Length: 270
Image (tube, rainbow, N blue to C red; front, side, top):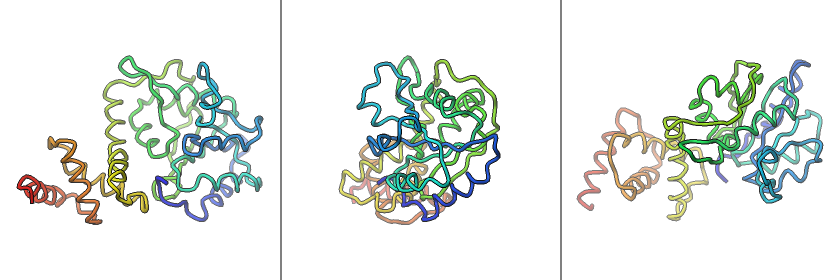
C-alpha cells in the first residue's frame, strides 16, 4: 500500500457533499485502475466510462488498468462496499462538474497520453500522488482543458484525508493533442523522485510503507537538503536511507547542516 489508511469518515464526507450539490452539478469518482486491476468489472457497463477506451487498440488487459469514471450516488450501498477496495491506494478522486459522464470521460481521456520532446507517455494524473504537481505544472490553458467546467477536484492525499483543489470552472474545449514542454516534464520528474527513492529503500528491506506519508515527508526533506549538491545516485540513496532511519523531521534551517555532517562522515567512510 502506498499511502496511509483512509480516514473512517471519508465516504461519509463524500455523501454529505454530494447531497448538497445544486441540481446543475454532479459528482463523479475518478478511480485509477492500475492499483486494483479489474476493479471496474464490478460496475455495470452503463454506469462507468473507461478512459483508455479512446486509445487505439485498447485491449482487455489495458481496460483492466485503465482509469475510470462513475457517478457518485449518495444512497448507493453497493458503491460504499465497492470503494472499500481502494483503501490505502492513491487512486480516488471526486470531481464536481456540470458535464455528463461521457463528456468528462472525453475531456480526461485526451490527457491519458501526453507528448513531450517527441515521445508519448502515460500521463498519471489519476494517481493522486501526482495530481497536485500536475495541475501546478500545466499552463492556465492546459488546466482549463483538463478540468473544464469542474469547480472542485478532491482527492485522497498521502495522509488518507480529502484534499480539495478549487477550480475556476471554464467552458473550454478538450485538448486535441496534450503536450508538455521540457520544463513541465522536468518539474514532474522531480515531483516523483521521492516515491522512486521509497521503492528503492523498500528493495533494501526497509518497511517504508508501514507509514507512507511519514516516509515520504522524510525523503522529500532529504532531497530538498541536497538539491544544489551533485551526488552519485548511490550516495543520494544512502543519505535518504540514513535520514529515514533517524525518523526525525528537521527544520529547513538546520537540514543543510545535518546533511553536511552526514556527508563529511560519508566521505571519511565512517
